[in-house]
Image (cartoon, rainbow, N blue to C red; front, top):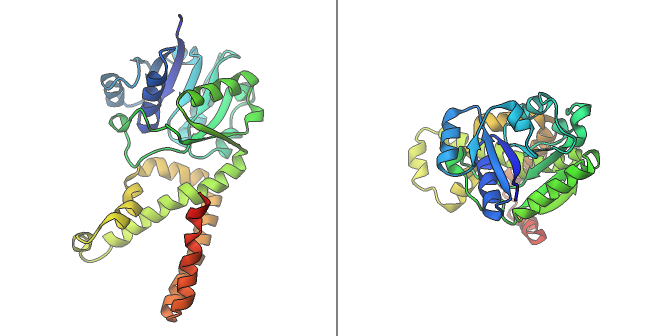
Length: 279
């Protein structure tokens, strides 16, 4: 049986884990990896994330499926640089922002393109961070699917179902609004908390008390600054709005504590307890 060819551009946590997940789920695919970092390519081959590595753009664009697991700004540049794409080729981006990407694809490639966001990740990055269960039972958001070709939509659904993801559908504008609150702003808060401690006179002494809560809240502050700079840039307006809403709540908490309104503070915290009853 002939294997379908998949290209994965970007061999870090996201791309590398995708390669492992697909290889674990099926032997029907031959995976070609590509990365601008030679060390990443060497590691990806050594770790078995892909079957081979190639930066030959003609070889990549002849694949049945092309995944882009690279920073969000680079996704747009990469896709719009593709030429001579077959009408049956499926191009899937895995970026954390969707609207700018979805609306920036050149017209002759739009039906080839599927905008996807796997709600999965860790604070680690690089090929060595990849593992085959990263996507297992996680949410996968497909955006603006009505603009994708019927074949491409079908292929995308099949490949994400193959690796046991739970698919939801959303327009790209709403995705970016929601992602600002549940993904992008939490990264801002984690970076801010880490920097607040580092700004103190003796952060090492403070950190001797660090336990589960602090470690959980600052874990994602270890994430790649370069990657998140691009995400913050693309989702700037929604991110600012989410930070303003958080800032309002934080100032309200501060006012209650300053005024020693402990009963109202207790009610405010009880209201927050409701969140985890929703999901």
